[in-house]
Image (cartoon, rainbow, N blue to C red):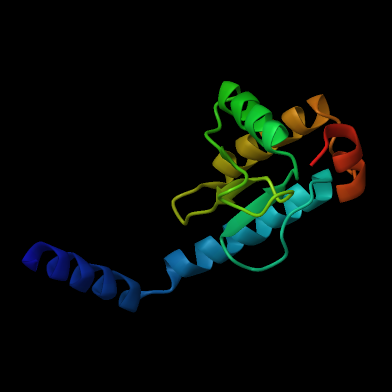
Length: 133
């Protein structure tokens, strides 16, 4: 449809002008990954803006997502059959539209909820032993 073509052309025009958005996304991603790791969460390795926070248990992923929502952070727990059994997670995704204060607020909420469930600094096996797979 013409509107889709026009939209795609505008996007290409915008991203061709500058790497500012890409640079900010990269900076946000590095900050977020380091913050989660330093706090003691287990995350999937990588450099992408999609950062899975591994919880390994379906109910735990739903409970954490619910508590994050209560803290003002919308997060979705993913579990089987969306991901393999035993690989339940909260999927986070960074954007260039996020400002540092957004990420700091989200990180504080993750840490608060992580402490509640006693999962910070725990190994995969320790989380599985406590919550099951």
